[in-house]
Length: 370
Image (cartoon, rainbow, N blue to C red; front, side, top):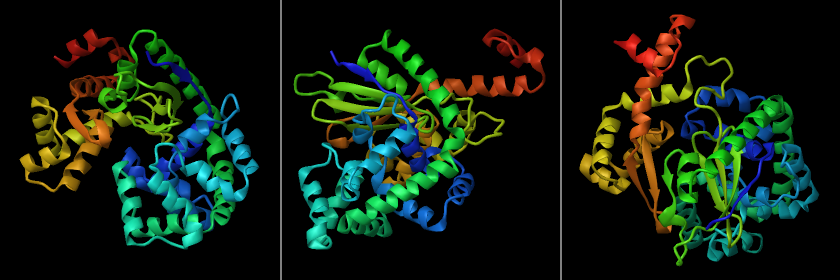
């Protein structure tokens, strides 16, 4: 049986929050608010982070291997600063999940000075397999980083420190409290569920069995860490040959990243997702049987990228389940509990607005609705 180890610390959210802020739409966040946060950084730091974040991502293996307990944001900054400037890029971006062919291309850039067409194709294909489509400017930024890793190492640490000081530190204590609460809840679940079911619950609808099972049919060992910023999504990567690291969202569905929001963000996401006729049709197909994006595209007579966009919105709303297969392939299925939750949350929010007397258990809400 898989062994589960638990980690916690604001270092995870330091990097996760940068992913969310530089790609807000993919995480259901308002782009204008995210842009406002980024604007607090100096122009040079802001531009640098926006260019490199798509390939730096969340360095799960590096974070999981930090010796600090808990793994605080400051501990991560100190650990990064302790590395030689030329080693920081590899520490943050290279792990055992990256094929050796890709690693050789990346590490060899400092000698070759750049990538030929075939090498660019290999690098793009690897990131596309991870559902990351790098634009030309981002590919150029990645190639430049590997041309001069020492320059990258210095500029990235400077920008990361600036981001921590001008924004992240303000909310760090709140994040810490939410992480500890999420960790406690996840550990309670682990006492009630086998690993596969636990991961499906923490990821809000991802089935990992066929993706992680080894030839012997066993799960690898897992290291799990809660994140305030990643909800409802997760970050997954291999730490080494025997362990997989997973950073799972622990933010309450009723809580928003944006201070002062009144309507629960998950309720808004689900209502928006269900308001689109194409997404409703997708859910009808998925309610019949799990399908791949290509199968859905054929049935809907739409381009696969369009279908993937809709599936991402449904995933953010917790309305579809992902079944991960070998080779990074995936099928999607209807997540009925997400749809059933929409009516309950809508009634709960609307009726509660009329006054405290209307806030009760499920039974009182149902009676009021009648």
